Image (cartoon, rainbow, N blue to C red; front, side):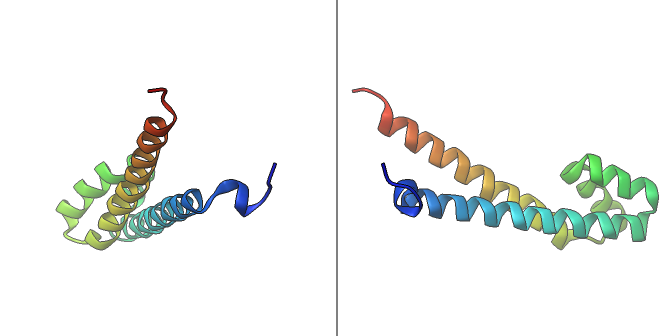
Length: 99
């Protein structure tokens, strides 16, 4: 039995890298949006954005007309990570199912 990179496979490493990039993008956007929420909207908006991520962020951006780039990063990062997980899971299931 192999260990290390050979056992995991290049495809899985690429998938993990893309998922990691999506998660990192979403986290950076979320932290940035929380900071903008606390600075421009006060404590209430900062806490709302912490707990209700994109929904509170969208309402905040509409009301205060700021924070659109961090909100886009948050949503895009989630789509990249979630889409990659979904696509990879479906492809793994389809290749391991008996025919």
